[in-house]
Image 1 (cartoon, helix red, strand yellow):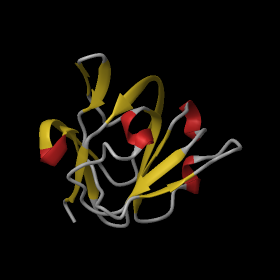
Image 2 (cartoon, helix red, strand yellow):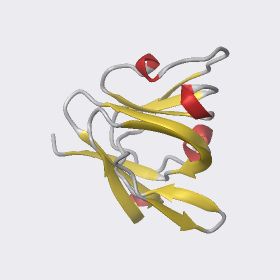
Image 3 (spheres, one colour):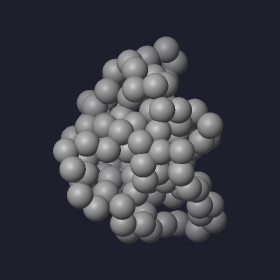
Image 4 (cartoon, helix red, strand yellow):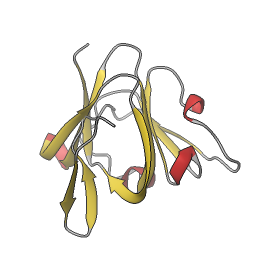
Length: 123
């Protein structure tokens, strides 16, 4: 797993990179899914472990992901970016702790995570 976890307030923040933009998309998942459900070119997060529950996804840089509920409480992630790594930040406007999830990285855990902004990097 290419993620470092840092305790922040009462949540856990990923110290990897984020991707995204104001064109974030979401998809409700009513049945068990898999990381492969994440469309190519997107960074996807799921509310449940093992890629289950509600999924949200981003494709461009995003200075504020707090408007997307699943990005504030997710347990699974997948960087299905076409050619970039995903830099995520614990704060809005690319602030706070940060980390990078390299293209193709994915993971699942029982503790909830959140990210508040992101950029695509190393393209």
